[in-house]
Image (cartoon, rainbow, N blue to C red; front, top):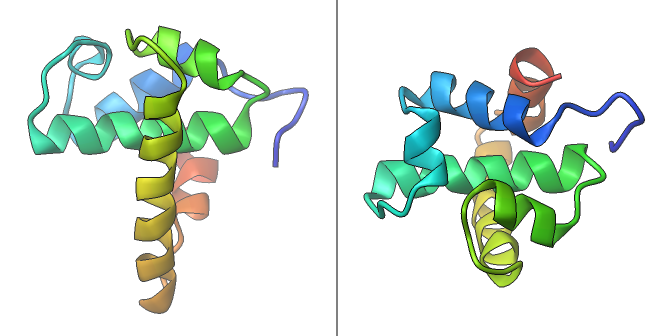
Length: 100
């Protein structure tokens, strides 16, 4: 899924912020309300699968200290995707529509 024409991390952050009704500073700040954390996880998931950015670069773009949080966030959305697939929904389609 990664391509040469991959969206920038800033574009992904802005698209997820808009779609989730958050601000960019919500996603890049330290607040830990559930809806903000879910948005941050979505950024991690999209960036991991659709850009060549390293886990450390994704963490830095979100104001985080290291890559381990990116792995955890990505895995959270992977689990959500599996549950959505069971309902016939696709997060990949949302990404193609809103981020690419």
